[in-house]
Picture 1 (cartoon, helix red, strand yellow):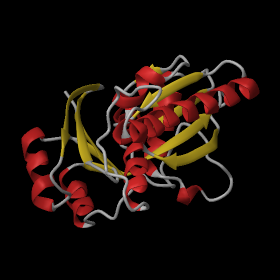
Picture 2 (spheres, helix red, strand yellow):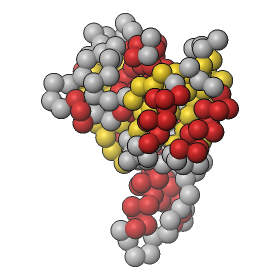
Picture 3 (cartoon, helix red, strand yellow):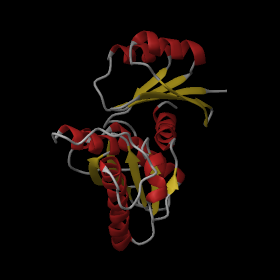
Length: 242
């Protein structure tokens, strides 16, 4: 049985998924990206392969560690992918976006796919049925919106995210939550409507930490999968770590 570690270092959390063959066995949040932490994960699961997707300035020594202990691949613009990327500057595309597109092409290879990642930022990633990643959009995520309203004003409080929001806020807290949560939901629905008008039938794949707050407020039909980025990383690893 082959074991693969898929590391996802995002702006908010650093996580690792353990795959036994092609199935996810466990997903864990890491304390940090230091070599002792990574070595402990390696010693626990004894992986054959590993892959890293990072959008932060992580400890570079862990790449040497993973390369010495496993068959390792770092996701970047030179990675072998199952789709083409925009002509502009492929080296500027976030590793997380590449992983999400890889998952879409792997699971829905004959369809147009709009993959929406909901992390620190919302990323909209459109891959057509010809396996061309056309690009998309980036906007602030939920936590960023809530923090911005607190930071850039004198008296608005910092409130915690919540999915249970009213249409009409009745105090400062619910006004902030309604504006942020329902504002994001209307934004996402609006993008989906525009894509539908342009491309017709396509899949909408929704993933990321803010999924729990937004899923129930969206009117459009979606495929919600909180583990989509890890499934994409595994698919990329199988191509680049044969």
